[in-house]
Image 1 (cartoon, rainbow, N blue to C red):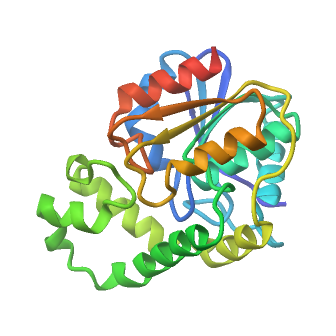
Image 2 (spheres, helix red, strand yellow):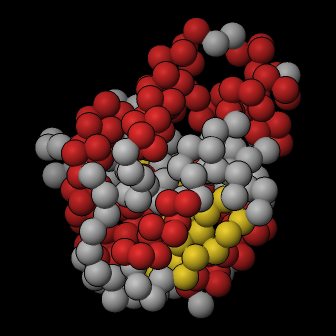
Image 3 (tube, rainbow, N blue to C red):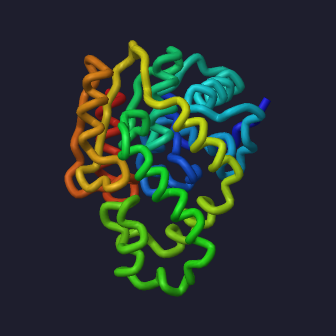
Length: 254
């Protein structure tokens, strides 16, 4: 059994945070302290990313959700509020489908792309993974170069501190679960299922990786869910506007 690594801080109802493909739990750093003022925040490295070892079987979003459910069992929690970004958003929805979520807030979740959209997103991530080791780190000290290189991930990449950009890229290139997770997610095709708990789908209007039109598809597949548009924010909105993202998550839980 894969032992998921995590950090935990704060008091209140439990809140799981799930990062995106190629990322790690550091992705939530801008909102972590804000959320910990209100919740018992459990910030997770998904299997195959960060410090968590890969699954011994194909890491589909459904399999990743089962692994996170195993972590809840370890922590003696029947369920928790769950917030996820990108692939983590899809995993959050799968936890909702399993009945292990009190509420779900999915930020630009994967699982709603169609046709070329999916292939374009995967092609960008694969290209970034290949190119990153060859990218001189000194170049990224220039705000305009950070904006050019990272604008598909962040709405305002020039605002992301250089050390965090470098950390994100390092995590991206060294993640042992990247290739297998991409393959398994593509094979899973899309999210399907019913969720009984409250669901909020939040999308940055400047998301260039997974376009906001995918949020409309999410509404069709998730009757009763709420769609929140976040003006000026990108695919990983925690870095663009931590206060707004915190407010969206808190409203979704409430």
